[in-house]
Image: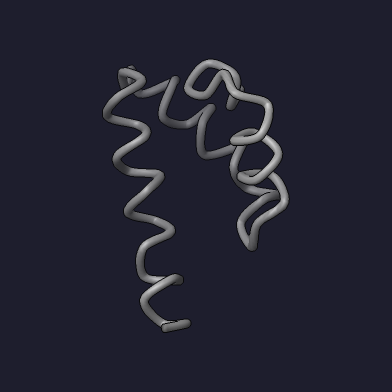
Length: 57
C-alpha cells in the first residue's frame, strides 16, 4: 500500500526498515481508506517520524 504514496524504491525500503517499518503499510492503507491524498498522507507520515528524530538529537 505504501506504493500508492511513494514511488521511489529507496524511500519504500527506508520506510519499511525503520522503527515503524512493520506498521507503515498498515498506516498507508488506513490513510487510503480514509481518502487521504498523496500529499496529505506524506505530511502526516513525516510528522509521525519527527518526534522520534527530535528525541535522538
